[in-house]
Length: 84
Image 1 (cartoon, rainbow, N blue to C red):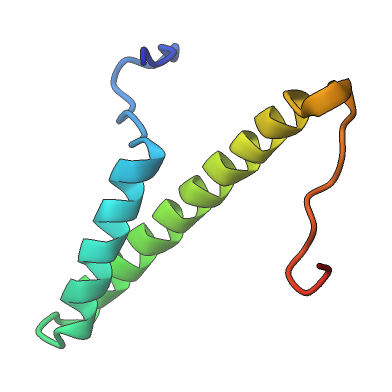
Image 2 (image 1 turned 180 degrees about the vertical axis):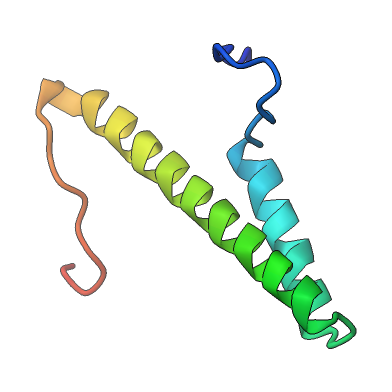
């Protein structure tokens, strides 16, 4: 699937959801290994926050798309955990 180009060609391209999740999982493994310096741990944590936000936004967008495609053209909310 093609990505939209932004006006700033020097800006790094954001990873897709699957890539971001894989990077986040690898990052967690590195941090849990206990081999990182404090500075490296902080950098990894910062990247983890960025990846988490990216994944949350991707899931939110996907949920909105599903709502638009819902049966009967009716928009309905997804049941929250514990509502079933």
